[in-house]
Amino acid sequence: MNIATASKERSKINLRKIRAYGYYGVGKVLRSLGRDDERVIRCIFYYPAVKDIATLADLVNRVSWYLPQSAFSQAKVSIPVDAELLGTSLESLVPPPSQYNYIGRHENIHLVDHKANLSQADAIMLWDKRSMFDPHVLWHLAKVTVVDPLYYNDVSSSLSEKLCFHSLESQQKKQFSQLSKSNYQTLLNEVATCKRGYVFGTGPSLEQATEFDYDGGFRVVCNTVVKNKLLLGHIKPQLLVFVDLAFFFGPSRYSAEFRQMMMETVRKFQCYIMVPDHSVPLLLAYYPELESKIIGIQLPGILDMSVREIIWMLIRRPKRIFTSSLPLPNKIPGHGEEYNFPTPDKLYVRASANSSNVMTIAMLPVASSVCEEIYIIGADGRKPDENYVWTYSSSSQLGDLMQTIFDTHPSLIRDSVYTDYYKEHCEFFENLLRYGESLGKRYYSLTPSYIPALAKRPAPPEKIGRNK
Image (cartoon, rainbow, N blue to C red; front, side, top):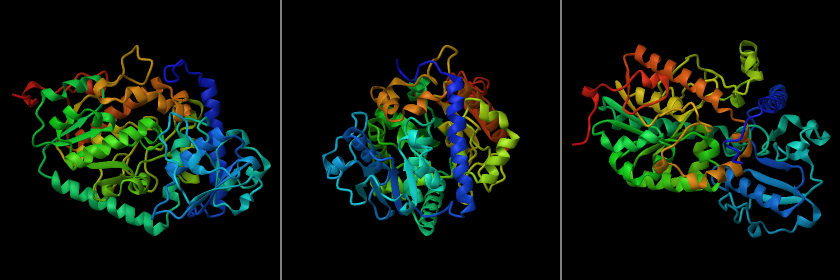
């Protein structure tokens, strides 16, 4: 059975959620008490000891991708193994077939004896959740991060992806932030005269996109639209947005293929890319030519909140703990706005409590920061009889590689309840558009949609520019 369409067991999902966020919360409190929550990670230990070659290959490949040896990060990684694996050559390892091979000559990764002292670590990455309550782990709980792919939802991919960022000095983080602000300002200067914005989803109605004329507009595409070369040639995108950490920032073959297409798109159209701010150093380590094109935007997430903010959110919205929706804050910590159309000085957005969809989380806010009229294409929504989140345009999806996502990040799909996600998505969509309209913005859907906010905002004929 395909894990993406398998029936969901809500009680088990809820238990996994409570355990995941409870365990994380205790560690967060301990780090806060020790005043080391913002510590620079230089020495990383994985735990427990690896006992077989297949597990070692999987783990080393993930580490090799998420923590590349670069000028940005000087972190060292120690992986404890049983005695018979100590002499293993890392280059001889073969990762699982679902992953692209990132294993090479990494001087920052070392195999060590299974009796290694965890007290030397700045961070302990728990790759097997069955060891969460080992005495050695609990003694160092303030340093522990669970990265088991079978843990809960996207926690593993989220925390693993941020490893490179957390290994940087504070001054380096500030430099990446300034780079993003500078690139964003350059983009805004280039599209300043655009009165119309066009944002493109990846739903089936995207196939109709070539029927319309986008000349003179600010054109924003997302995700695997980069696969559709014919459509890209027609759109000529100025901004490509992708924020999903498991799908686009992981070691799966799906992610690797996407990143190759992403680079081809940037080179051909000289477009900018917008990604989560903590993803900037990771991408630049692999693709330094993106330096003048990458924009990191701050996104809210419960794993980035302070202890006080987590407790306050749980007091105000306690039912979130016992539902299958993923609790996220409504505001960026430290910022008071409920919504924000980003500027270089305020380069952040608000997410909904459950639906971190690229359209609402970034594409529409950015388009709204520039244009008075915003047209939406390919945001079809979810049919009543869907058993996955929704249907995608076949010409703009890497369908043949989708299973590699499920195999690499199995808990992400296992713990996602799409009815909850979609309900929150529709509610946030409507509230976001209303906020924009209160500022004088106007929103229209060029293609049919099941999303109520778009179904009641069709583009009138006189607003539609069709190809001759």
